[in-house]
Length: 503
Image (cartoon, rainbow, N blue to C red):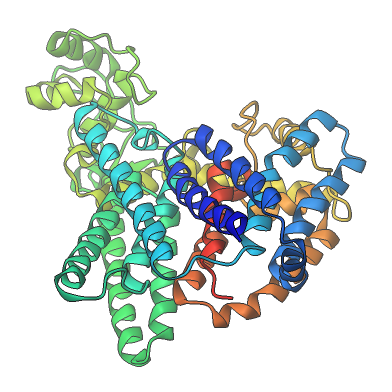
């Protein structure tokens, strides 16, 4: 009995540490899941574990996912890469096996573990916020220093779900009131922090999760009506910003002037590239831009910025966003503060002074314009995914029955990039869609088999808390835009919460 008690306590401690490490230290998370598996092996109690394993349809589906990747080694031509993929999936199999064959934490241990997890995510977000305030021009991808900003955004969503829908951890007296206040603050803070991370996936998860929660509530029609009103307001905001972005200003509609105030000729490329209601490549006089910019700033026109563009690119777009001509008069009109912003790589005043939602929308509109006019996707996260999905679909079309094998997808993607002269050639990027990745790796029949196995496991969700359903929704949505189980942080997010299921 002493041995059982010891291993049970070790399981709870290691589970707590693993929950903290998956958002703070990938290296320590690797150590924790190995220790969790070792404790499971030393615990014994094989009859009980075998009975739980046999009755778990979800464990059978996860085991099939892992084993089919092993089977896919049989027809891969890149065995080293194939073994690397299988090795990367070991934590998925190991953590799922441990938590699905071990009794879930109950009562106070469960509350403490989840509270510590939520606190850890909150602390990491606070660290990211301080970094954003103190590090000039910090890319949003680097705000969180420990794991991918996309994986961290999923954890922020999970904190929101727990804060809103999980049972109270402290239910008596003033502690209950304090906890309610803490939960409200956590929800507001996480929602605000997600704007810093610019995670479109996370907002899609929250929007769909709120609809599921509304449909699951007792006052269903009331909350669905509220949801429709909020979603309608968001859609209206997007429509207004879209109209402001694309509505042409008078200077863009008038007959185009042919020369500057100094008599030098303008360039009007007439390529239709729009930003902030003006054509970016009209009213260009590079000779005046170069000389006047050098006089105002002392920085060469072709000097690279931290944003990955030249100062000249930022200057042209900044002047265009203000509705100014791209000549000496336009540069002379700029304030010293605006000159400093352009020198720092700011290409649109909206990106520095607009609200966070407005910044996200303007980035998305600019990416779309770049793709529409120049078929450019390099550096554009959302439109890169469209190119990646197109490539993955081509691979599935060519290898529908068995896929390319566990280790050959990266090479197949590169071959397609090269054949189509894609701007992503040489990037080494994967499809950024877990479903397309599995289709391309294993083929459509095995993907259909996996789908059936996971669907077979989902009916039991009706007996689970709403939080678990929302967690599953977050995984399913993230797999549309990410290779969620391609990294340890994503794997742990997809398995750690299984420990809190309801048997």
